[in-house]
Image 1 (spheres, rainbow, N blue to C red):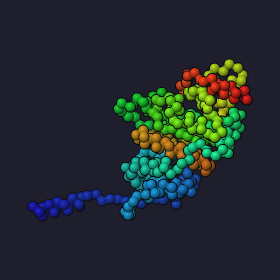
Image 2: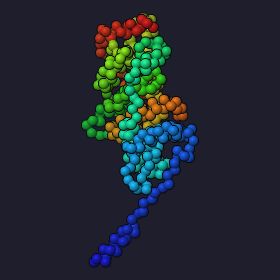
Image 3: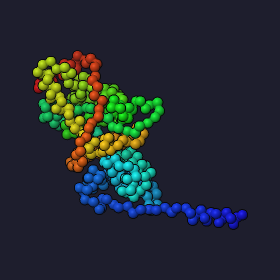
Image 4: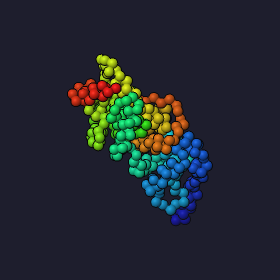
Length: 343
């Protein structure tokens, strides 16, 4: 009996499939910067900088020879957010398994959000004045510190009691992402917590943004569309302009506020995982929020480095554009009237 068991164990060992380790090509060594930008959205020196920042978070604490190196994990994540390929396709390109791709994306996204902090209102007065000057040069609206808007990012459908909350007005599952951009399309604030059915005004009220704007050293106001309430720190257009002054304000307001819509367009063109042309984000809402956030951070890195946008295909922005019908405070109306009289 003992002899039979030994023979069976030997047979099982013989039938066990051996692990195969594929050769991993180092794209950072074999590709030119223009090819890296086309495939990963960033040149070599920027990718290496990201690798150095996230290494302590994603490097495997093991002595195994075949542990996936940090630079491969970063390339896998950048490839996914840039092209929104299937996990199997991303894995084949980098000679790793589909399950490893999924795990790597989660780990690297967490590491980037933890190490790259480039989304915030400038703290120095001179930087804030520079933002106001840039906005004023567009259409002469004074004291503007940002343009705010929301955009819908499609995510995987789901079941359960919370499903209806994620179905947006366009009838697909989504997250409603609120963001503030400056005149150069750099994002100063984002909120990626709320499901697609949430109204823009509700996201704004519960985002902490009002307190942040009102606590700025020299004050200022945001520009928002008619889906937001008129406030002393948030200027919206006249819904029914009755004279030339109000029409001129709406015209200047629209020319200035459009920068945030352009920023969304550039963001989605650079990172196709955020746009329906690249499918949907196939993760839970919490993990989708994490991936969306790193795309905003990577967008700011690309703008700072003046990295060209290779993919210039047409991008349609989906957003919650329902009108907000609340009565505005008297002081808010007076603020808008004062700004309109200066144009």
